[in-house]
Image 1 (cartoon, rainbow, N blue to C red):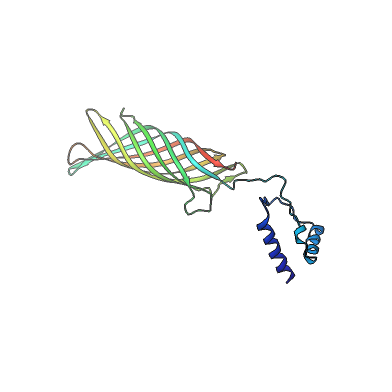
Image 2: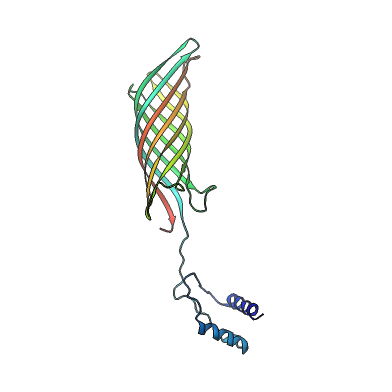
Length: 239
């Protein structure tokens, strides 16, 4: 019974205390302080009990929150273009070089609280073919940064695999006409993360279904690319 009474007493005193700032760093009561509180209760002199706050009240954010992600990469690869109609088809092979810019935001989604391994992004890519033709691609995508499966990790850095997919459109100018196409891209790679910086290497496969200006002719491109790049994550909160 005495323990229940003391518990109610401590709760009532806590509610009535002004601007208390107890934290995980507040030291526990000593045996003498505990004996004093019990004696004061038994003598019905609880008004003489005082509680001391920490000398300095501290607030520490529990996690970092992602505000924005900016990234850029350079790459090269092979492009295969297939042109066909009901009578037949032919295939052309090119090499390509590309430059990609990305803006995105990280989210936790279904993962452990506050980890934010899932990224939604918008990207712009300019690809230049060895046939001296260039085209622009605008994609919206999703990337899973698999930090929960680290390949290497220290207190300040981590290496992990990534998977992503993106969809959008591409625009190309060829001779006297312009064409557009539905674009999809899938990639896998490795990312080395150190503080807010990410250094990554990816292999991607992309396909573009062009809207050929001549009716009855199909035109598709397949791209196999290797890219290296750098990402910076703008964060808010604890460091």
